[in-house]
Amino acid sequence: MRQGIRRVKRSFMGIFAAICVVVSTPAHAKIPFPLNLLPDYALRIIYYEQTLKVLDGSDPNYLARDSNRQNPRYKPSPNNFFPIKTYWISEDDLRTFSSGSFEGDLRNHFVRTRNGRREYRFFVHPESKGYYKEFLKRAVPAEDYIAVPLASARTLLTFRPDNPKDIFFVKVSLDREVGESVRLIRDRHVTNAIGTSDLLERVRGEGHFPDHFKFMAETFGAVPHDMEKGGMIVRPFPEELKNSNYAPLFALYGQKDASTPPLLAEMIARSKENPIDYIRNRLIRPFVSHWFDLATRFGLTMEPHGQNVLVRIENDGLINGNFLHRDLNGFNLDFDHLKKIGLSEEIKRMPYISNRESEHFQYKIQSQIPSSLEYFEKTVLFDLDERISSWMRKGWIPKTPWGINPLKGLFHLEIEAEFIHRTGDTARYKDQLKYLEKPINTFRDKCGPSVKRLIKK
Image (cartoon, rainbow, N blue to C red):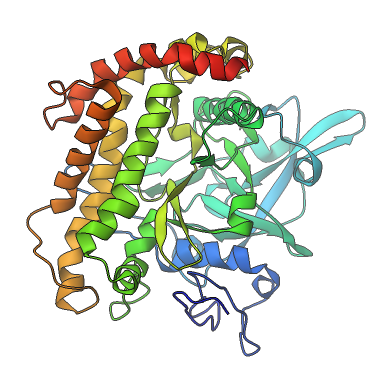
């Protein structure tokens, strides 16, 4: 067995296990049906999402503290799964959007033809049935699926009870307040997610993205006609999660209980590295380089908070700056820059309901440059700065001088170094994210010709 951080998977009602390097299934494991039939890679992501989630993180002056007003039966807590109703909806009553990769077994879950008319399967969360009351009057009830709520509460790992190996994610509209807002999916968020996924999939398929950029595709979306809110988005279960051990960033510092060291503390102790050096060299510096590459060369920014970004845990049980992104509605694509690098036709394929530029958020492209980095600073790094001193006091990691928000300071140093490395401009940054907006756009223009030659190959 490979060496690494190991945990013993007992039962779904208690603890999943061996998360970091190997997920073993001991004979005595008792996982309730039908979850006991799920593949290990599904159990691993459920463990991260339900047991190691962080509900009280992020700078309260930046984002609302996470709160959840759901019925406990449906919260993303350990033990929770539930049946979810699905309905066949006529193509006349539903606006649907799909990427080029929506095909095969996943498509068969969602599309059928009856009496010469196409129908689509629509998932309705138990707490949203009242919201869809009128809409469902003409719907045809279909099979129940099993839903496992993940950290965001409205993203569900789903499967049919008779085929638990065939799993996928459905992001449903949730008519409950989570994080101080009701989590109904707007129509423009559906078009944005599917359009972004389709463009990224096309560029990735042609081999133009760097190896360090990986993302979860969102291949099908639907919104009831005449409803601005109430959409649904479908994600296939990616090969990366099957073949490698990716954990959401929040799972690095989340704990299953107060007495158990979090994964990141175990990693730091195992590495024998200084805690600041470990986090700087294996998380902050790789992320900053990764962000600059996407922002300057490809005109892409994202919302990289602890839930949207996953990091790969390598075979030695440590992280080394390999990221996987999800929730493509949080991405912003700079159409002007994409046109300059030869992607005009890909933009024209992006779906919209009334206005492509508005629904793909072109009006906030400039402001998204600094705010994208703020997500990482004021969620992930804020959470870590808040916790690491206590890890030292408990003896989980080596003691080292730890001032006030040192990771935030290191983050800005890495941004400045990367900024100077790429632009040669030593005067513009000034330790303030807002100063990145103009020079990043200028540098995008400089990058345009070289990226265009890459795209055209």
